[in-house]
Length: 300
Image 1 (cartoon, rainbow, N blue to C red):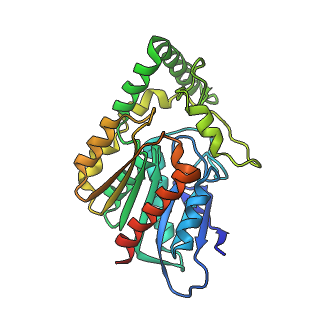
Image 2: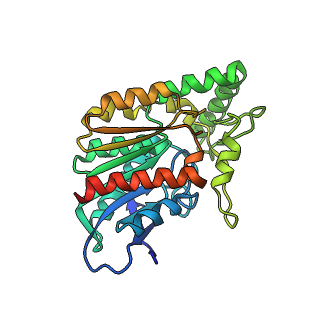
């Protein structure tokens, strides 16, 4: 059995909630993997399944919530901010290396979707990460913004502009954010309203958990400037990129650009949609491949 314990830490003076998964029956320091979710996600949303598989293979796994999300503190809540999330990643990485159960010289990062870009930024800034997994990765906000506008058309662009204006007005008058849905049906407005977005998010939420399907609208005005791909040349550790070739959210051109910029990269294409990697047979084959990658890079 894998043991899970609470292990909170601070990022920029704010408490972030973390879980430490420890492998069974080991008295030695273990190589470690740091994990967190993607766009508006919380740690309960299918990430424990990955964490448990990695811990069963002998890794100490640290899984955390960003400031303002899940069980972490931080106000206002549900503000998605790439650079702020990276600060949380750096703090989580420092915390993980200091844990008694962890061999601080052998720590990898695992990110998915939006955090697939965060791990690139974090590895580039830290310089001592052992390996990264970037699953269905968001790494170029500009390409993604253009991709979503093309799919949503003029109506999406108009609603985006209105939502940004309302949220900026609230910021200027020190009020709570104006929130928009993270995921919506195609005939409704949300940051993501591709046909698979809302059912995809909902498929990740455990039956006994609630998910606040909202984020501050300001991310719509800043996401285009968040481009972790520009940090990829500074990543000096091995990288594994799991691409969903039927992804409606991440354009394949952005994955091409990421792979081109990484020096040591293994890219695997899966004929799946953006949310398929988390469940069922697709989860089984992807998590096994990712575990094998960590075995090669953090153990050998």
